[in-house]
Image (cartoon, rainbow, N blue to C red; front, side, top):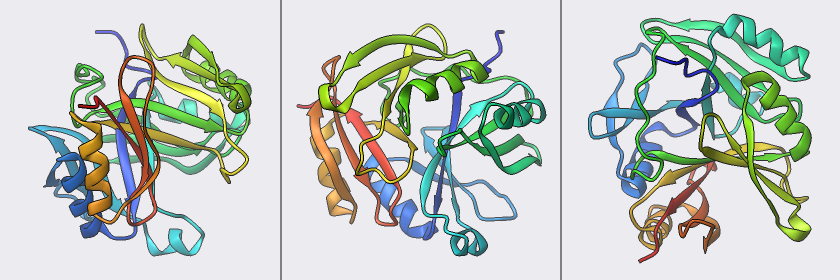
Length: 256
């Protein structure tokens, strides 16, 4: 089996209201909630019997230091302790040093040179389940980096994980949208953030079977629609959102 190094393998929501976040995402995306049985409350987001992400409450100290609700993608790293220093040498920062999660794996929270957060992760089993089709409802269908500078951001991630360029699109005043691949097929895009976006960040797109109904559920559950729905190449539609606690995410799916 080939190494999953460089693949996004987990998505974690850090929030300020655990129960409210459970209710929101269950209602909007349809995830089944499952207690992970950890000492600190941790909820698994599940599609059927498969866990696809997790939820935990932001520690009070983190909130006092300025942390806000957000989604964090976990990227598989063959050796977290080796790659954390590599992030620093490439201009990034280690925000939480490598640490074990008993029975789960090892992780480190880091940021790229422009400040976008992500997590280095290696599971205890050294393997990764086969990923479902990118359009399967409930799974993550796209990863989008709103960077301080898109071109230099790609250089950072390609140097660290071996990501490759796919198609690029000229979006006029919005600049170049560069698709990237972690294997054979594109899994996301990078762009230079707009002036109205205060800091660089990763935006994760969760698949639905119908986009308009999803947008309606976001509003009904107290969330906010930031952009869309609008069509993107490939015939799918997207809508960018903010949950009631302030974490940004996006939905992607067909329009019926």
